[in-house]
Image 1 (cartoon, one colour):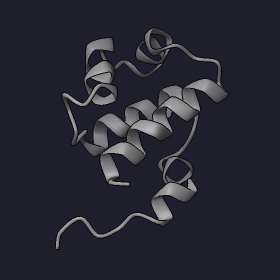
Image 2: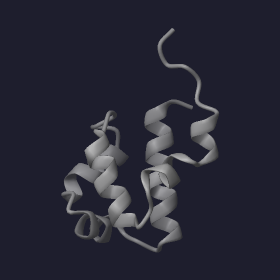
Image 3: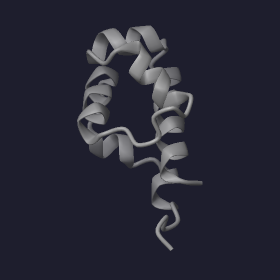
Image 4: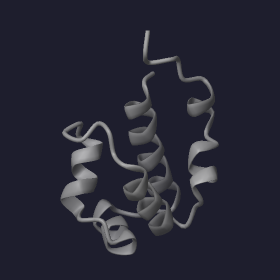
Length: 80
């Protein structure tokens, strides 16, 4: 699994846990729905840390909580 897929999966997981739609996440995080959809559908595979922080704020989690998911601990090195 690469970092992009781990980030995408984590956003979807947290939205599901919090019963939050993409539009609700957009409203809560002040990130346009199109930006979130670009991340989720692969058009934007490198979201910035500020965007991730805003999404975390909207989801009610810290960056530490966001990245504490097991999939991040097992990421392989992407630069070979």
